Each structure stands twice: as C-alpha cells, then as structure tokens.
Length: 211
Image (cartoon, rainbow, N blue to C red; front, side, top):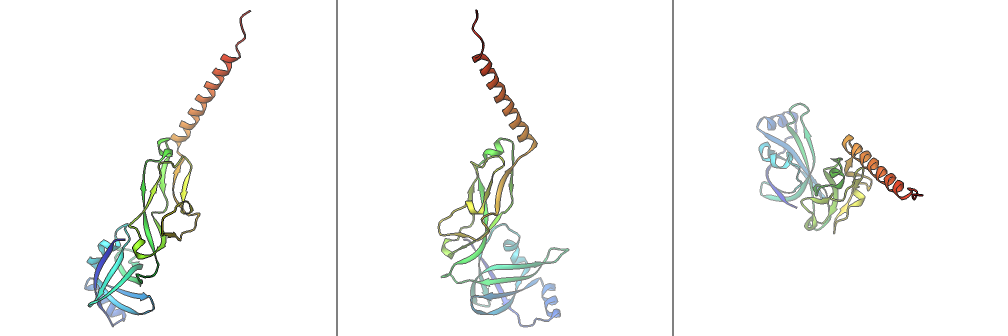
C-alpha cells in the first residue's frame, strides 16, 4: 500500500483558546495513539492534508513529528458541519511486524452481463475493511464483475484474496446489478419470443398428414 508523508509539530496547550488559535493559523489539532505508546498531541498544516482526506484512496502514513518518525493510519476525522473544514484528526500507530486493520477501496473491472441485459450496476460499498501484514496490503481490491448477472450481487463473503482477511460481515453487498424497466421489458420480450417459437414448433410438429 502507498505511503503518505506528513510533517507535524508537537503541541502542549490543549485549551479551547489554544485550539482556536491553531485553526486560525491554518493548523489542524491531531493525536496519535495506540501500539502501546503514550499519546502524542501535535498539529498539521491543513493544506498538507488535501491529498490524504479528500481522496478515495487509503494510505499508510509516515508521520514525522519534529524529527521522530511514526508509522500510522488515519483512524478518525472530525469536520465542521457547515464548512466541511477538518477540525480534528485521530491517528492510530501501527507495528510493521503485526497485522494492520484498514479500509481498502474496491476497484471494479469488466462489463457485467446483467448490464448488457439492460440492468443498472450499483456499487454499495466502495471500501472494505481488511486485515493483513503491511507488506501484503494492496492499494485496492480488484473485483471482476464480467459474469455478474441481472438481479445478482457480489458480497464480501464471495471475495477471496491471498494473505488478506476481509473483516466486513460476509453478507455485506459490495455491488449488484439492479433490475430496470428496460431489462424487465427485454426479459418479457425474450420470454414472449421464446414462447412463440416453441408454439410454432409444436404446431408444425402436430400438423395432421393429408388424407
């Protein structure tokens, strides 16, 4: 999985006024915890977060806090309810020698059979929660939908990847081909045509011989 590098500076004042001042300066208050280490409070320049926050991708983060490097993942983000500005970030420290749990985006490929029949593809979950060692984490989970038929779905339990454990419930629907009016009409027309052909064949077969 790709890494995202961030430079940060420690902070020791946690009062509301101090936090407000940070945000006025274009900084985002953050905390790093986990991996049996003491919490580290720091701030990051807001403009440096665009490539991390506003993207469908997932990253392993290389966090540099005043010269000290930490490997971590983004655990939680708080946004302003009106402006959508980042208010606070929580980072979770990870150990490269232990399995990591993280959300990974799905990458859909192929043209579904059900879509060719007039159905509509719906992607219900664009990321799945997985667990794997750092060296085995992919940038995305490839899903081939070529054989996905009309009215059918692909669930988390249908997916298998080497050295990767999917943590979402097996019943979680990733994508499906939904029936539409066009597909229903096409299906009805096909059935009517098939019925007509069958009736014509039967009639020809059962025609009495001439006297």
